[in-house]
Length: 619
Image (cartoon, rainbow, N blue to C red; front, side):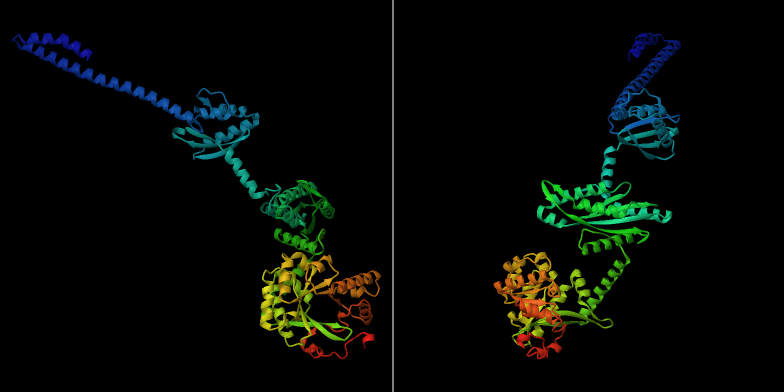
């Protein structure tokens, strides 16, 4: 506008003056001046607009650069940008903060930047070269890619991507927290939190790998399956917190017993495993097992509690016992089962006989279930005889299995299996019903005795089941005796209340196999027992063992004082009968009178047994 004003000021008077000269020449000059003024006006307007635009664009560019720099340095990730010749033109503040390097003047060579980063985190020159080569290789790849590198104590992910004309961008992210979280998750998936030992999953993976080595290289390995004895008692009496601390201490002792590179793992609960890894030679496995047993029997102190447990061990060898991980675990488990069955606190090697026994047990279990449905089970009876009068006072019901092809199967073969599987509950209920139905037709002075297994006694509705059976059969309650063992009294809950419920029905209770187990005299005082049956082992030793004779005398005197009927089991000879009678034991059960027989064979003897063995003085 200033320029245009100056032109107007100079040209306008001339143009006006020329208009007053009536000549074409002056008029033409006036026209030229007007056109010149218009041209100047257009030019100045154009120049003003472009200059203003340029100034505005320059200001905006400065503002954008400021915003870009602010955004670049406010990123949570590091950022590097460079050209095709590997010169880095942009490095944001986060890269400097990540690695504690001095702010680099850009452009800087990628190698120099990598060297500075490596130096700041204490890398050796060789490690620095490896780091640079990795970075260089990834930024020159045609596709976007990621690599992770540990720098110092932290982990970083480098996200590399190519841009136009061969330039590159690298975004750097600190993934230390994520990596540690993943490692912790992996540790939790593979290791036991309580003992920090490998868990079942990790142990099975390791065992699989060892079995591959074993097959490929002809090595040997051994597996020890360890189960703690009496651990449940610790949990029940001292609480699970003490139990957890005890497991942790057990894990530490086992780890100290087993030399590297062999593996100790906790499979779960109170079960541990030791894998002696594949090699041409193994440590002395028997000695290691003995050391472990000794350590487990050594007293533990947990929060000022003195804790004494123990352990049982099952051992298996590869490839002798099995060439697969699953097979080896199965073999050691069978050996462990045998160790616990044989009294605990032992280390036993697997043998083929154990597998054969398991196969037989499974076959018997399957066949027994079929036999129960097919009515192949029958009840035999063995009498208890008053030797003074040779009269039968009661019959004990005993379950028998008449197999269609194998004949009579011993109860010692199928009863333990039925107890283990829980089928004894069904079998016991059936035997009770059968015995009560049979006894209904006997003389009123003859009772029937039925054994109650520990698994049956754990039923909450045992008394209701007995009452219902008596109602259905019509048998008088006082003609039914339920025989229980000391083991039943020890392992069952609410023993006294259940016994009182049964006594309230009018049913008599008998303590069977007295003299075995703990033989607590407190049972006789605490529980409503009407009859005690002395275990058959005493009858076998009665003639030749003065100690046995003294024990029998004491039991007899105690029974008389407590007004408890006393029965001698297992009497097989006249000499044994005479001895028992000399100790005032007149109720006799054993092969001297008869083996267990079907009721049809015994029924004629219930009224009068003419040829029954009897005391000479009573003849």
